[in-house]
Image (cartoon, rainbow, N blue to C red; front, side, top):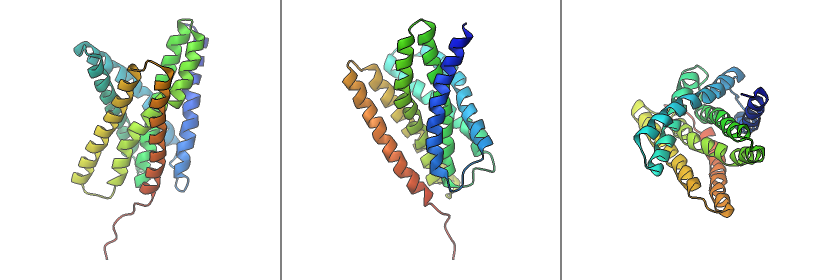
Length: 231
C-alpha cells in the first residue's frame, strides 16, 4: 500500500470536511461547544464508518435486491452515527441546550463523511484513476457530505425540538428524526444509482442544497427554544 496515496486520500477527505464543520460551528457562536468534545465527536464519526461497513457487508449478504440494500445501508449508517453521538456527546455535561443536538449530530455526520470520502478517493487513486479520484472528491464535497449532514441533522433537530419535554415526547421525537434521516438518506442513494446523465446529478444535488437552506432556517428555530417558565 502506497503511504503517499493513503495520506493524500485522508487529507482530501478530511480537510474539505473540516471546512464544512467550521461553517456549521458558526451557527453556535454565542455559546460554542468545547473544541475537545467537537474533536472527539468528529473522530467518533470517522470511526463509525468502520462499524457501518461491517453492517453493510452483513446486509449485502442477506439482501440481493439493490434498492433494498441501499435503504438498509442508509438505516445502518444513520443508526451508527446516532449511537456514536449519544456516547461521545449527548452523555456529557456539555449537552446543555437544544442547539447542541444539531451541532453534535452535524459534527458526527461530517466526521463520518470525511473518512467515507477518503475511502472513495483512495479506491480510485489506488487503481490508477487519479482524475476520477479528484472528480469523486469534488462531487462528494458538494453532494454526499451534505446528504450526511442533512440526514443526521434531522435527528438533531427533533432532539433539540423536544429538549425540554418529557421522556415520552423525546422518544417519539427521536423516532421521527431517525425515520426522517433514513428516508432522506435512502432517497439520495436510490436517486444516485438511477442517474443516467450529468443533468440528473445536478437535479439531485439541487434538492440537497435546498435542504441545506431549510436546515439553516431550522437552526434559527432551535435557537429560540427556551424552557417553560412556571409562574
